[in-house]
Length: 271
Image (cartoon, rainbow, N blue to C red; front, top):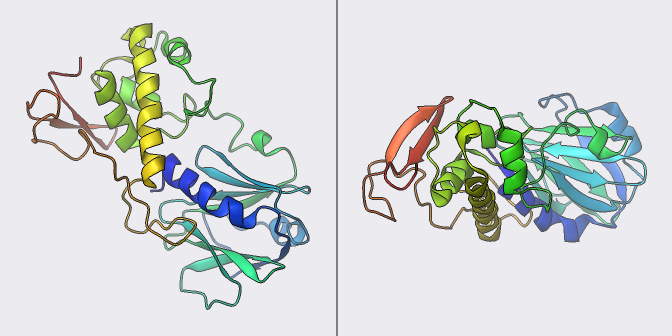
């Protein structure tokens, strides 16, 4: 599933090429995505110039003077800038066609993605308004995490993966960040000190920054804005390395299950 780094990679890939372009039409071949493509998008987006391409959590925001298109890539979705007359593939469901002959093509084999429209400020949309802070923004800190964790018995790994606490910390990134911070993934969120949360916040930012720089987590069917696969090419320290030596102490990395997800950690380095 495309996570925050993949979505941010897509945003950075398409933004220079679509900002300022005027939409001439929206061509919907298959409206049955996670939610049906709304008629308001088809009717109101044409004629508008793309003022900016933003991101909130895993949602891409194509902002215009009339409203914003909210794009979610689901489990297998991608966006590519193409020539508008390029023949569509089986899973090419929506084209946002520009007046200059290009199009932003939404492809989604599994159809778990979405393309929505809002005329209200995008941050007020029901899917966005209750999200936690962006981990790469200035209001995300160890102090914030410490305050949010106060009194919570939930394990720290699902705590930081909760989008109402902080957005964009998927399973791979949670594993890697907890390792860098030296925190055991099963430790109760409310029993971690403020200083350790400062280390964890820094580790989350570091792992996400590394992934964005590398172009996104390895995902066979992810395509970024220029049509190249995105790869999490930074060194994975623990994720997917169960039984292998820890890069810090050489003891075997352990693998457990938490909330139906694989968790990898070093029993010596993480307390």
